[in-house]
Image (cartoon, rainbow, N blue to C red; front, side, top):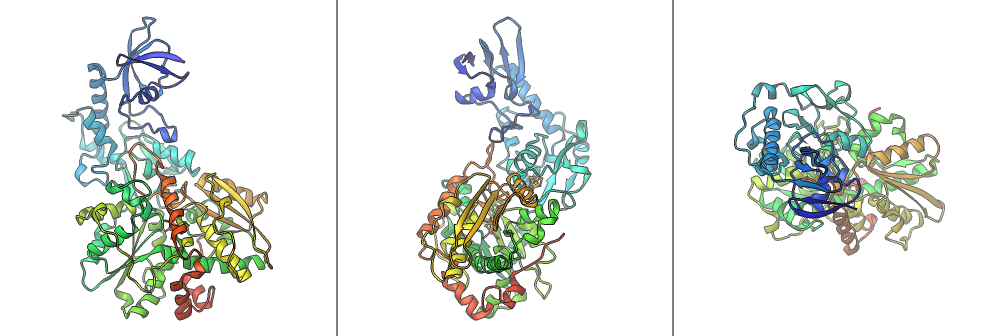
Length: 580
Ligand code: HC1
Ligand code: SF4
C-alpha cells in the first residue's frame, strides 16, 4: 500500500495504481477523453487528464497525464491548480483546432464526451481552429450501415482497441501524421470494401460523433407523413429492454408497451413484433437443422446476426456452406409483411414500407443486400433504424417514452410471440428457442426442461449436450458471443478440433442486448447488458406460450399461407444464400 495526497486529502493506493484510478476511488473527478476503463484503455493521447504532482524527494512539481502515471509513495497531487486547469483547457483547444465546429448538426449533440470536457475546462475561446485542417479530414460514407467522419475524431483510439482486442477483427489502424492523423480502415480501403463487418462496437465506445450509423430518420418520417404509404414497424427483441434508459428509466425496464404507444402516437400505421418473426425463424431453422442432421451435415451455424454473416463472408468464406439458410427474423418479417399481411388486410404491397427498429448497425447492411429482395424487386425491409435513431426520431416528434401509457399490439396476424422468441435478444437465446422446438418436432411432445441453464452462462464460448431422444439422440451445441470468441470457435471447427451439431453466433458481446446500434453510454462499455438480459428471461417466464411452435399466429400463418415449415413456399420466401 502506498500513501499519497490528492488535493490535500490523504489517500492510499495499490502498487502500480494510476493517479486517475486512485482519484476516482476517492471521488475526485479528473476529465478524460481517450481513456476507457471498461476496456482497459489508457493511451494518454488526449492529455486532458493532466494533473500536477510532486514527489517528496524534491524532484520538483511536474505536470503529467494521470491515466498512465502510477502513484508513488509520498506523492502530492493537485487536480485543480491554476496550472492544471489552464493546461487542460489548452489541450481541449488543441483538440478542437481541427475538429468540425458544427455541434448543432452532429449526431452526438447533447451526448458528446468532448462537449462535456470542453464545459468542464471552461473553454471560452477557440484560438487555433482552422477550417482548412478540418477539410483535410476524410468522411467515409461508403457503407450502408455506418458513417466515419474523421473531422470529429480526436484520435483516442478506443475504436481501434475495441475492434482489435475486443472483437478480434482488427479492421482499424491509425493513419496520417500531424494534423492529418486519424483512424482509417486497414490498407487504405473504404469501409464498404474493408474487412470491417459493421458490428458497430466501435460506435459504442466513440466519445464524439466521429462514428455513427447512417441516419434514416428523415426517410421514415416522410413515409409516416405520406397518406398513401402504409408504414409497418417492427422492433427487435432487445430494443424493448434497452430503450427506456434513453428516457431516464432504469436499465432493463421493459418498455414494449410504451414503444407501441409512441409509434402509434407519431403516426405508424401498423406496429408488429420482431419476436413473432423470431418464432417463425425457429420453425424454419429447426426443420432445416433436423434435415441437415439426418443427412449427416454438421455443424450448422445460426445466421440471424448480420455482422456474423459479414464476418463469415469476409474472413471465413469456407464456412458459408455450414450457415443456416433461414433468413433472419427481421428479413422474414419483411417478406411476410409484403406478402401474407397485405393478403390478410387487403393492402397494396407496393404501398407498404417496412421499418425495423434494431439494436444493430449491421442490420442496415443486411437490409441492403441484393439477395434479400422480393420477386418484384422491392426491398424486404425498406429502412432500419438503430435504437439510437429511434430515440432521435421520437425526440424530433416530441414524444417521451417515459410519459407514454403502455399499450398492447393490436394486429391479429403478426404480433403474438412466445417466450422462445423473446430470448433471441441475448446470447444463447436462439439456441434455447431452437432446442424447445426441435425436441417437439422430433418427439411429438414438449421437452420437460424449458430453461436450459447450461446455455445461459456468459463465457465467450459455451457448449452443452442435449438429449433429443428418439431418432436424433444426443445433439452437441455451442454458442459464441463477440467476434473474438467466435473466431476461436470457427478456427477449431475448421481444424476438425470442435465437434458440434449446432452453433449459435452473435457478433456483439452479450448478443443483441449490447448490439452496436444501442444507446451509447458515456465513458462506459456494456454497462447494462446483464440487466437487459435478465428482463428478457423474465419475459420468457411470464409468457403463457413459451415455445415457437405453440404460437397461435404462427400456426395460422402456416395453415393459411406457408403450408408447413421448410415447404417449397417457405423455402422460396424465407431462405437465402450468402456471398462468397
Ligand atoms: Fe437481434 Fe434478431 S435477436 S439479430 O440479436 O435474430 O438486432 O434483439 O432483432 O433479426 O429476433 C438484433 C435483437 C434481432 C433478428 C431477432
Ligand atoms: Fe471493427 Fe466492428 Fe467497428 Fe467495423 S464496426 S471497425 S468490425 S468494431
